[in-house]
Length: 622
Image 1 (tube, one colour):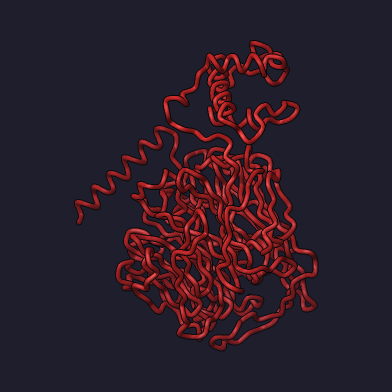
Image 2 (tube, one colour; image 1 turned 45 degrees about the vertical axis):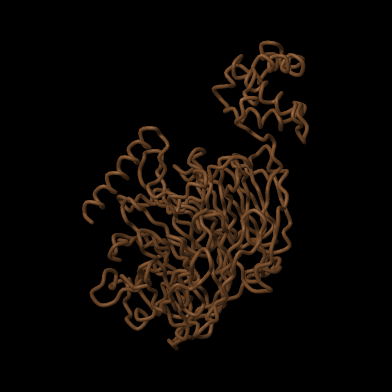
């Protein structure tokens, strides 16, 4: 056993060293969730809630790009349920896409929406809060939580239940809304339900058997680390600290990054003096033992329900420092050094108003409110463009102070709150990953709750509560495609490759968090773009630069000249050093004005040959 562990460690260390030398290394932990799926191209899976363990939500696929994203069309859609909340992040692996509702787990064909199997959970206790955000996958099994506090393991091929564990008690407010994360033979999950005055827990279970391996309580008491941050022990016994989205994990350091929710009573902080650890924190645990390694608290002594709800994101900055990005309901993106645990920068991504101001007896308006900031879908990273992308909600709340007593299973707000009557909006914000400087902002028609996904094709994919699917330009934030889906988008937006084609899938039709938004029925939608060029490997498709020279002479020299230098600001010389073959081909098919469109769609066989050949000539000549 020890020998195998040493060999595995050496293998990982060697791979990481090579990647660093080549300059391609992202944050340790960026591996696709399940390994060893030879049928899928590198990066072609979407193996977990946030694709990779590091939570970067980045796809290296580029078939759908800035040049053809406007041609996106629906491939298929399927109704997953008749009604209810739909916030799941789709997972795509082994030729199957998995989505969930509070009781349903559905496996579908990712190319045509055909249902392979459907499992319906029949709650054994009352559902505390009918929400579920997705599955984890490991070794042919999918794992999910339930609204009555269970953890299920299902056979990924058939949907058969392999084991069931009781991990929470809904009678005292506990449930499981987050998507688990699975690694190294273990499944990690936490209890949700902070507002019902639970005492949050993080647990690890054997993936094969369901046996509990360890647990960690997020509200410390007695001699536990952080217990002195609760000056009143009454609320330390049930002070909240649930977790309701997803975790991140670093396989090299065996660290689990847990986002922890708010303390209770929510709006009566004077009832629980102290910093109230580990609420509103990222909590870093040893995956093997559950021991706490370190933490960073975004909002000490929170009195406004400003959870860290979204999954952390791990990456390396321009100094090759390992950092973690945290997007909270406080309306900021915090980036923290993983070695020193110091804050490197903190940038607002929505409206901030009356931050830190105590609530007055007549009520105080604060922004973001209890339904604002960054909710359960966190940031994405494009490491090449050194950009973080994050969606947020622009919505405020008026709160009045009060007090609360503990009653098992009851909400423990400790005050009154009211959502403001402003028309809630949303943002997608791009930040410099190294400095936190805002690169661009897109103001959406409605709150942005959906997952945000960046791709190598230069696009950012997301959606809003008004039911708009959005494809934005990674560099500018310009809307390249907007599709009305008919239902609020509050779940995952993912992209994957199947059978040599790139697809986009998202969930629409969510009835929770949709005030001033679109409802709809829970529906999975799959899109494809019009293929610009079918690239083949046959010898007959080998580019012919000599024929490309003739194409260039006939169509290009009139403007660019024979040497490619006629147009100021559009000199073709050195183009091969600035653009890849794919980028040149995409540019030729979708040029920016005033250049005319030389290759109108659809391309016939001769168009495809001319395009390949002229690209080869441009690369050779310039």
